[in-house]
Image 1 (cartoon, one colour):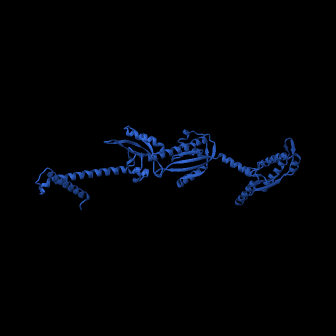
Image 2 (tube, one colour):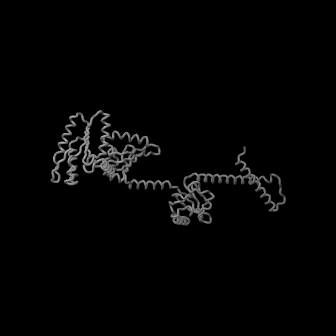
Image 3 (cartoon, rainbow, N blue to C red):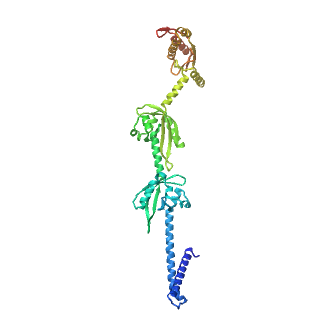
Length: 438
């Protein structure tokens, strides 16, 4: 089957031969040669020369088109943005990367001017460069910002030079690299650094071996270390010193392997060895190969929160006058102890008592003296119990005692007699001797 190229070359040969033959015929007539022969041999030379001339032109045009197509294909498959702009700012040529980045169709590009794609803040500076290029100045590397059809910014870096015809400089040729991703990544790194620096919570970056790679100012202030001291330190030295670390370390590792994250409360240590409670969030950061690259730890000192919680608990469970447990704490303690005693088949003792003669002291000496007496009474009760037992103020002058792990009934009677004997002894308050019984 005859190829399209062979047909095209045959047509070119025939057209060249025919044209030169006609030219030869008319030339003879113009020269006044009356005897013009139409014999085939009279046209051999015009046919051969004309045909081969047409064929040569066809081959040259084919190679030129092929070369142009290769260049077009190359320009449309490079990542750089290529543009040719006329002196009146019209786009004479843009490649595929340019069209993809700025999102304009070929028909829309016909109606665009250079100023239409420039960021307004950059437009004046860019137009000055445009004019300098036409004056033949060597500009060097250019950085600018284009605006795509959807309004997004396209950051570019590259070069541009002037193109000339016989009439002089009439266009600029520019090739630019799209550095938008680089600029955005740079801006992200800048913002990340600022967040890392100004975060109120402590931040640590650990390598896969738990060695500290980075620390922020908040953690330095929190821990008392400086950045150089922390660099390369094993995070275990800061967080996992206590015995409970043996239990919690596997939990952290398991959570990081399964969920890529762990959150919990832990005891950290300052440079001087002072422990402090903190909330910790650890997240795994994976590399592009889906392998663990590092760990990011967010640390918050919750010492004040714990103190506040303890204060709230004290207010909720303790009597503000005597600092003994209040009725709520007493009830909770007793219910827990009942459950434990039933499970363990153990025994405990429960005392209820109220003060005899307290109302008379209040009436004679005033409530302030009564309060001082209650405090003194509470101290005597507290001094007669063991660690783990409980003394509580149930009401105004009513008190309760719970003694745990009682083995013999006689033990309870002895403690009761001791308490009665001690609390019934005289109280000397502000120079006044007072007596109460229970």
